[in-house]
Length: 307
Image (tube, rainbow, N blue to C red; front, side, top):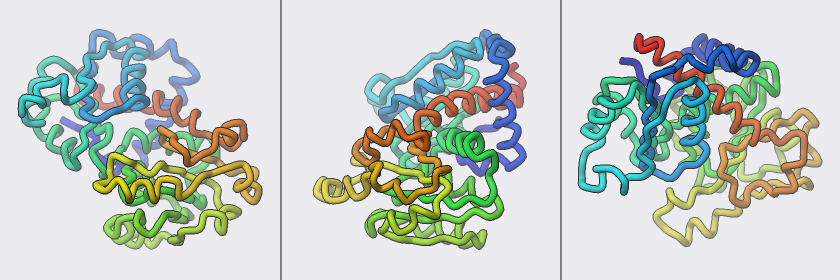
């Protein structure tokens, strides 16, 4: 039974096919409105979520399917001490496919190894968030018309940001990509991501604490929030949380074709004044995520022989 735990579980060709299906869903929504009739998606979210959970649920409903949901660990038998493996094996009896978010790294892999239906990782701690990356890739493709020859700035919490790690993994497959890694010293990209992905693929990169020095070079700027929930020390969080705040003034030297992305939720790192800038793409990302999740659900259910 195939599950998607990491963005690298999908080949470059599969990513192309998913984007093609997503574009077709946008063009011909009526053709897909009964595709998952009588099929059920279980959304198991043991960590707070708005966009990802609702996006999965909207995706399944728009495919004609139904949704059953665990909205927090307190509302499930996890509160009684039940293991992830047992919980997922149980939910497999009720649903055709599972989307799961969990605060512990590796929980999605445990779930996939225990489930009897496909599992989609909707975020596991600071590790991976593959469907957010699908939204990111689709947004980049729709805005740029290509995936190659792009300079991508990643700014903010690059240490704990699972969306950052997944996006680096995904974009490292494309020719001519360059990364500009912008963060406080304490929140730099983990060494294993640099070594196993960026350096292994001989991708040019710059590591800096200064956003403005590289703004004019960027084709894509991927802003992230400093994540309070990943910190053990409140003082460290308060000291770092406003390290980078994107404003219209800071965008004066940027390319007119720049695309500004953010996985959301936003706290202070992008001024609301930027929302009116035509280069702001983060709410487009939200919608693009729904279409890509629709395409992924269809793919996994077809491969499982369920539809």
